[in-house]
Length: 107
Image (tube, rainbow, N blue to C red; front, side):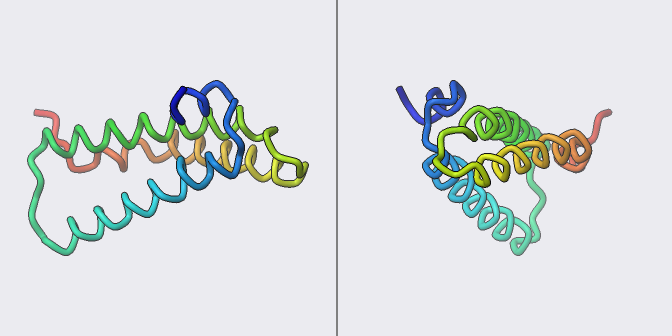
């Protein structure tokens, strides 16, 4: 079973999910976003829509996976922190969905 499946089912250790499912993808997306912004070029709408949809689905997955894997640690405080982060990501996703797709025009 791969990381995506096992994390979604709540069978992954919390540290492993945080490192490989959250920290590394966040770092990569930040670097890609920085390169894009420095280039000053506009991406085609289909690329923005594809990237936005990917980010949206990733956030849904990480939110659910963090909640389900939060008890896979020895520390109760880390369980509480993981659940807080999961709620924060979920609320941020709901409140910021318009921002994800801000460069797509619907005409």
